[in-house]
Length: 348
Image (cartoon, rainbow, N blue to C red; front, top):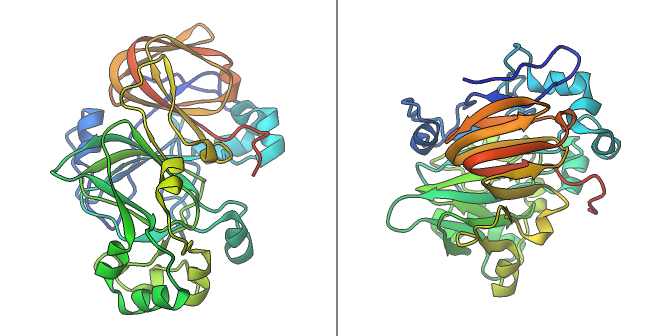
């Protein structure tokens, strides 16, 4: 692993990071292993939490990324937030990166679930952040790679409550919009939206920095209902669910098809995602403005130049870029997903 070490007071440059795959309840991991060039196809390693300062729900350390000097990235950021995040970001979001990036390889269909809004998280979970997310499809396999997003039609609260109480999986899944996807497609998933990811879909996932999920379809995925609702009762948990139908106009506002765009910088996400996170696909030589960021290299090889120091990059590399690295430049035959938190002035 190539690294550029940081000192104990602040990050000096960009830092390459190894895989970080906390155990999950569903299968996957082969696509992550193939991307990174490793041979470890973990049966339950379907998520790689990249540059994570977020723990799994209810856990003290699981999910956190460790820096080459042995510290948790979370602790390094907390110790010197201005260097890592920049003064404007700190003024807006404190010492939170306001971002969680994952590689997610669905080795089986994920359950129907949703995530709480900021307002719900503040009221019931003691958190500033809920969990809006977005998916950047980087690979697919199988005959019908699909995702599921939002109810097709409005659904009454008592109907949803009955589906969940009886664990009527066919009704829940059948009520959602089924969307076929291919690499280059992106999907914005506002908090509260019922959704699922189909088997064989491999994504870079951007999220608000929490691990909050309301699992409507828990049977066959979780051991029991206790872990499905974040410690809340079912009625309270379902208050965050958006029961409105998503018609074509709504879906078109959330989904982008970018596979055929080959500019040096391709904005990937729907406009509504901007208050939560930013992501671009970068090709070849591109200059990056100062910002905390996460890089996922999809293809090729090259380097990231930062303050006269070069970090070698290749297919499968992941790296964290501190704000204090200043303006950096990608060079070489690279295709990279560049993930950033929202701008400090992004309205919410």
